[in-house]
Length: 427
Ligand code: 0X9
Ligand code: CA
Ligand code: CA
Ligand code: ZN
Image (cartoon, rainbow, N blue to C red; front, side):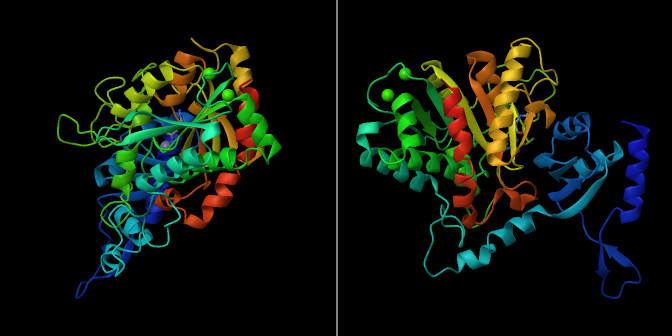
């Protein structure tokens, strides 16, 4: 850690007094410090260089978003203290659990609801989002309403046994034709609900638009489009259980020590755990699992992709409004498995995707190093033209994962042009 940052960090800490002063305790003579929340939301204001972001990301904290040299994280008091002692400037911006309760309308207002919403419904006001059951119903309806151009199957079941549907959209859908295969995957991180809506929008657009929208018709006739709306159904259901958002990221597979969850996006079997871009600690939000493909959902996708000839792929996440391409495990452009010409192609297509949707393009390690992520595996193992999209919003705290449902239509249609560019370049 550079001395300069340490000095600045100490100055910033001194300026804010390190703790929030909220008022006077009854009868006390001095201001009381607000207790540091169990799960505090912090802004790391001096994460301008990627080495710093990787150091923060690999410290076991929960990274919510990273953009413009700052990171929003959730940290325990001990984690926050550890980062500060390593010289980082952390500003406490909220109490994660309180903010989740507020964003959900509060547990009591849900409990008091006379209409008796089921545990798996989205909180009041966010009903526009699809629960797992609603997603399945939507995919089944698209398949039965457009039987000639769809084939509904499954990539397998989740740890808790939920089916993970995949809808194929193509002319002669029942036949495996020699047309470029393009895959869209969504919601591998539980709380990133806007992404399920993104996959459902792709399904709706390429089924309802067939025969009337010439662009859609052309792609359905010349491509085999595969859409997996939810790669983490157990986590997604858990995130909306109990009457309020849980802020959950991982899957729901138990670990040997009783903790729960593997980060699906650190469990893929290409250079798994190679490079300091994941955690070996079971409680960490970026826990890589005990072995590559140990997550039921990863093993299912791995087997399914292994039986196909996927040419291009987008994995949708939230948030930060970024278009990211491989590799994530190294800062290098050219390395084992990536020539300069291949890198340039990723950068060129990625830059065009980003100009279509207004996101910011970058190599994924430009955000922070990850190992075992889906895109490194898609390219490293299968040579798929693969991107990670971090959707709306561009910044935020925990609210960044829970944009009100009015955002679904504008933020999913926003990617129509980028999806079309990917489909074109799969040829
Ligand atoms: O950390 C992740 O898995 C992704 N971000 S998220 O906030 N949705 O969890 C980003 C993965 C992209 N790869 C790299 N940054 N190396
Ligand atoms: Ca076809
Ligand atoms: Ca085919
Ligand atoms: Zn994500």
